[in-house]
Length: 192
Image (cartoon, rainbow, N blue to C red; front, top):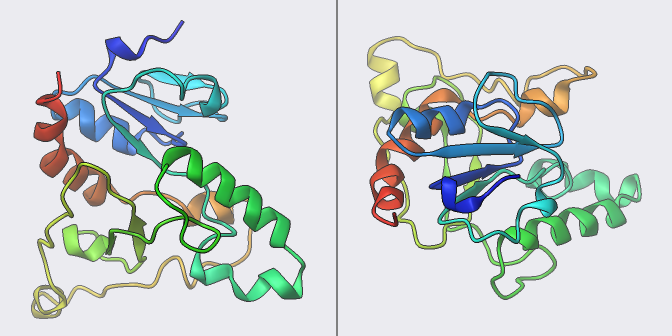
């Protein structure tokens, strides 16, 4: 049986272990949770996050599926009549964020970050809905990459259709996970 008091942070909707392991490297007692098994050995609850969400977690980072909520897929809502899928996604998202609703999804993102801000040479805007945590500071800018002749790639945008495309598009890049742990880890530790 999972006990929230045994952990400092729950990483919800994560099977990769990327963020969980970054938190563990910073000295936090982290556990991930997903319907899928963990892709790397480590503390993981395989099952529906709703089974353990009611526990009193000291901190949580959640990665709810944004397939129907992201701006990148809005154009398909009417064309493919995906409105109910969007509403279901919004209800799932609101489980993690209990703020007042802004339209159907909830409050707007506190911050959008890019992988290249933290050292991964990719573009992929990622919305963060922060409660009790400060925005992440940008570590790099595009001139740093240009000076080193490192191309910053639109990897997600250019991804071809495949059976695992959704999973590949939703990955958290390692340097963003490191930034989560570096900047937020000490704040989460202070909650102990």
